[in-house]
Image (cartoon, rainbow, N blue to C red; front, side, top):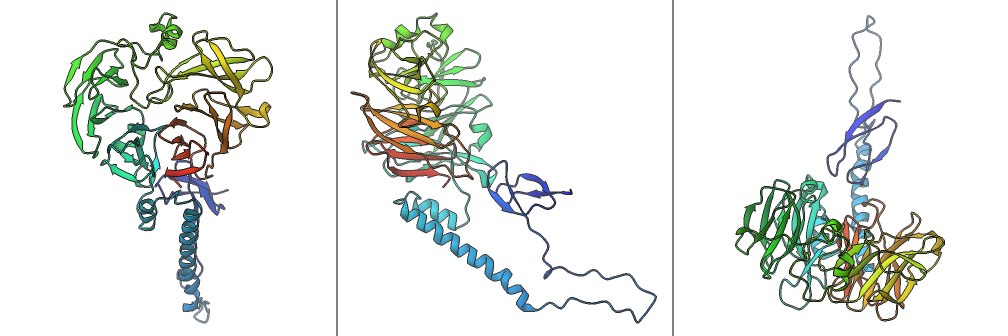
Length: 443
């Protein structure tokens, strides 16, 4: 079977497909494309070599102008149908596709994809609602990356920086927030500061090593940088850099010498001067503002449940996530009072024996705990439980497009919503009902 080399019309990636294929899906951006073939209508006949007989006749294809009509009308009809279908979907979702994104799509501009596991949250305009800040990517435009801010109540774009690199580069380093700036650590050992109200570039400071994490500084406008060489630096609002005292990190259990659980349980709302209060998006630990500790240390015993992770806001309620035990593992969540459980419930609403969950996919608001799970390889679901008594408030299925990046990447509770990242989009669910409030990114 002959193979042909083609380029993806969406992102430009090189694809190799069988010669008889009529369509292909790009392994890089996930978008489908039809394989263009030569048309007999447009094919230009090559002249035959001279023949010894002058009476030999060569048939010529008669091309009628009417033959070109389908080539002109079919794309027009298809484009009109796609535009009408997109408009109908937008209306049926209560405006989930924002007008600025829809206008950009109609104008042929690159499509915005959400680029982080979960966003950072900050009230950028003083209206009392925390806004969404994160990395966005444009797969169709060289996979360029930018930092963008969106309104926390509607998802409307507030500002966006210029290109900060390719997504593969920008996604390898943490993004953080202080009271004055958005901080982006690059893979070449620099930290760039952007004004958090406008996104305008402010300063760049050389760290000389890759940044592992950002922690809160001694003042709201300062940040502490933990570098890969174990050196610590304090950054001020003007981009000044000074050596700093190291802080203990819950993601590095050897630093606590098996005393991490006691420190976690005693953590009050004021924090502790020797601990790292996370302000970045390194969600393999926990979303910014949430402290977590996993089972590298023996966690409190809960009857009928094995704890995998504890999460809390400093000074707030402690929530355990894990599995039912003994028996077939079933995702469970519990509320602790100190080391004693107040309540413990199974996460799946049905078919518990087929359910599974990642212990990092949990979020907390003041009144609710949100947990993501799935049945086998089926669609992800997000369930909400009241912190007071564990009552199930709602349980909804997350819609994932077949063309999109599969899977669930993380979730974080904001003001009135829980934000769920599916790798290329960020969906805001109403924290009281589970209904979709808005969506940012790949539609």
